[in-house]
Image (cartoon, rainbow, N blue to C red; front, side):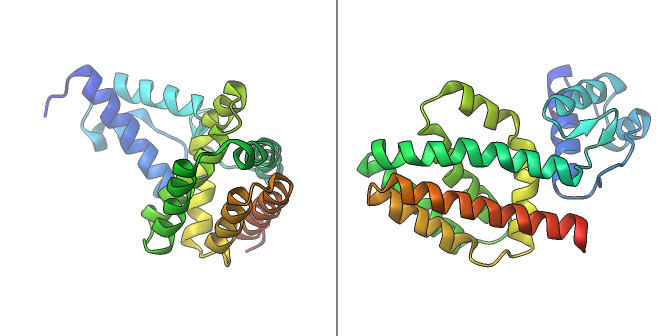
Length: 205
């Protein structure tokens, strides 16, 4: 089956990325270009391009699937706490009524969905708040981490962390009440709970 070079690159990128995010390719796995090219049905060049792109996103390091250390996880969440606790204060100040409705809808979607849909709804909730920082550097920083954040978020959702969506609801209420300090404190507790759950999952069990 022939693919144009752009399509082949995209196919290779999306296939490898999905295999990493779904856990099919586990952390530490060495990526063999020939084998991947054969499996996906493309030449080695798009595989090479896909690996380069995934290295930029942090999902691959030195031709191996990224396997975060405990310190890596802690550092990532430290950065998120700094950015999102700041952003949520701004959200309490600036979010319009229409934006609040959309934020509330992400919580409703998460409550009434399953699997990947819950992960996407949770991502939308956090993305909306990060965007309220109105700081392009912060937004860009979170964007660079999005693939790894998604990987952790998926683990948290699929392993059913208790109170996850209820905590979003409480953060939303604080934003709607224009209480930036409370919203910030709740966000910090929320992300600390995510961090603890992720570490227990990856490094204790």
